[in-house]
Length: 473
Image (cartoon, rainbow, N blue to C red):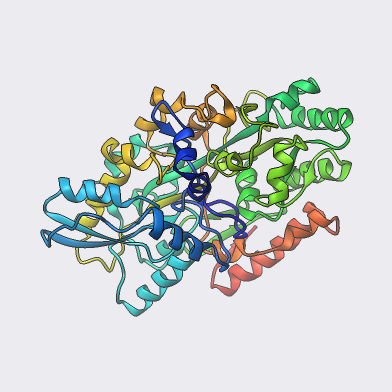
């Protein structure tokens, strides 16, 4: 899954690792571990030291290379995947599919892989048969006709086994350009003790949430019902999607829609800016030491986050709040509605350069579309949150808990939300968008979301046109 776009964080599996083997075991309940934003789905967008750290830790503790050789049998495939511990899944595939041998390579996470992948495609040399590609990056390979329509190899028969939004985001009409992997449905992760102290509940609508935010801050002038990071672009557009305000639309051609200034988009911007300006919600950078400290000490009572978000928070919790955390559904923009949001996730396309697309599709389909594979992938150190419904709806998965939540389930809200996520249409230029810092001034008080949205409209329209797109708003 993809998380914040500013490269501020380590992946969740590394957070578990920092706790040590005993810490990891302690975070397992009923045989299930907290699904972390594993490297499979948490690739940052900067070129800092994250990928290097990831590679070193993975090599030392959770190797990503297969441990059992295929012994040269069958069709030879190469897969680029950066999920820690994914070699276990590849081993099972190789053992159960004697006609195919998958060689696993970890060439780097996120942008590190994408640069190498794009270079290989341009050179028409060294392209893997299958690679991990985040949902928001898949269109960049669709538009260049670099990925195979795997519906011709039977991928469409898996459609009913996946969360609807995930399937829509790998499809264009009847074509299927990748198998969905992990995801990150959003919910509210709240300190129930802090809420009870001030007799506040988040509410079922965003209007009620705004009133609750005012009441909470009035009761505790040093505290906030929630924190909002306007510069984390993936977080921002994920929440916008729930409000039917996702700013992009692309259906596979040369036309793209860029809309940051429409009625829904400005409603979203004005809602959050009003709360920030009133001092009821804090605008602050997420995934920083201060951020974790303020969640732990009660400065922030709730965090609108992905299913993998708690894995970042958990290693930073102390006795001050350990066991007090509970999940709540995201509030709705319309009373009685049931619209969810998703933040992050990865897909597994087959590339047109593959000499064995049928076998490559078979591997991708098996890895993402069978319980045999998912029974491995959701366990540490891979720890992926599934889009695969048979696991997502299983009683054991939904009822699992972690020390942060005491005996209360951690995934019940996210698992339910997965079937109600509003699918979005990612444009083929998300790498550029996610690197923008246009909205950062909201944090320091020198900008506002409505004004920044107007700037984003101009910036992204100009960029899309420079890439040859016909742009509408």
